[in-house]
Image 1 (cartoon, rainbow, N blue to C red):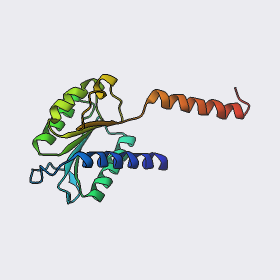
Image 2: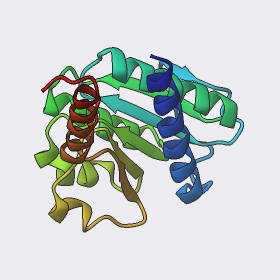
Image 3: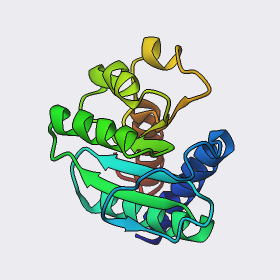
Image 4: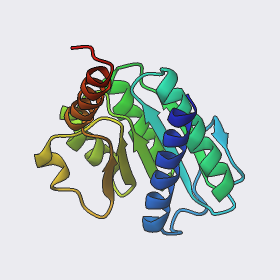
Length: 171
């Protein structure tokens, strides 16, 4: 569990830093949404949208809130409950509220372009779910993604377990 929290914290910090590196100060007087955290000392606000709340996503959400607090960034979180239309509405609401960025744990990777379009001029960071190569090959400086390759991860996990049990004399 400690490794998961550390991993989530590192990803959250990386996401916030990536967003902050690209965010300007153009929306400093913009309205903000409810359920926010942080004093917004930086003048930056963002929304994190998760596909559905589970233990890992709750840990990632808390790590993002903690990182935002440390950086003085205002953050709002929303749960799309596996509903793509809700996710798109939350992205549009964040844009209309003047947020600088949106962090998206996408419901359906096939709707990535719709998310980017709904975000308009906001920075977009896709997290935890990989997108098709044709989508992320078109990323601009305003769009990025943070995820792992499940096939590679599974390969290494299987390799580890095979070596582990082989060392114990089990086939």
